Image (tube, rainbow over all chains, first blue to last red; front, side, top):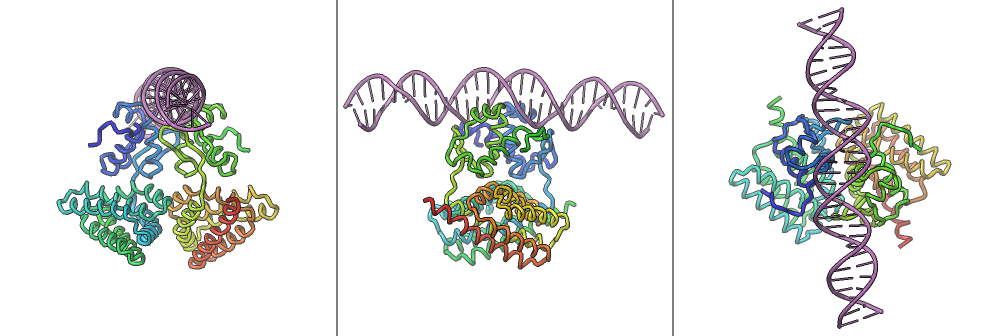
Length: 215
Length: 215
DNA sequence: GCCTGAGATTTGGTATACCATTTTTCCGCA
DNA sequence: TGCGGAAAAATGGTATACCAAATCTCAGGC
């Protein structure tokens, strides 16, 4: 999918491909990300690969070392806790602002993501459901009207998509997103913020279970 | 200063130099950042300059356009409000955690920055005072023990340094930092969080005054 | 005088090449 | 057999070169 000649730079394309592979677990945590090898693999030169790797490092999906190869990040329980702690600081604010604004375009985008997520969840299409869930979060932070807040959340998107990939039961995620959307659409800022906090606390426990099991 | 042969990559050095020039206003908002020109100016090739510019764009100090030059970011009142809104979400959390941990090393680093800031403020050395104030914030978020939180704050550091450069009276900033430090050192998490919120509200009004005056 | 648009110029995107540093390999020795 | 350590290989950092796209300039027409 998406191999068309978009007017996307090679660098952006490579970043997208690698990000996908990392969050989907195709690139296993700890494995090397060697500029030359990736360039050869993708049939391009090192320069765009290099830029893509820097971008992934910025998103916390790749770990750079001095003068040596990067590796795919290994997420720990502590990383998950830190991520959720930051999200609990940012997302209730985002949904509160979104509920205050009720921007029609933003609401429409959220609704679209939500419906896609709902359909994908119903037919057990985990990949699509996860992607739609991530898109919903992005649309939500954009609906806040605070572009910096949206930018910060977007820099967490990779980590969040990885996190979503860790658990299989995606129904509760859809249900909670739906409640969240309804509260925002209704303009109930306090309720929306409360739901966001609850959603995040639930996400913490959901994520920890499978991680703990394979210890 | 700092022209020694550190084992810093050219790319990092260029980023540091440009960041300094931007927050100090030597590169005026809206002015072009042309890879070739900067490379010639610094006597190096385009590659490290390119990487530095990407980094600055990530920090929100440079604005990239499609297939064209970047420009130095022009900050608006709205940008300031958005920045402070995000800081109000993140920093009280950081100081709360810092007060709960009271890590001796972290406290020592904070104290050191604070003292430097105090001395520089007393002798009206605005440049040093601003840098020390920024370092204090960084030490504070690191003291939280949440590395992601520290990373997020660090990505805001450039914008914050720009913001600090906008106002001249640095004494209140020092006073508030000192109170903040004392609360954290005393382990009073709630007081520390409250002080952080107050500090940020004060920062908003301080920053807006000079911006408004030159409208 | 002002718009238009085609050619010249500027500029970022990518490819290739070389170098310094780090990592790996593997031989000789205890 | 295990352990330095030096040579070899791997790898990121930087420089240079070329290309396509965007921007700028300016002559020509209204």
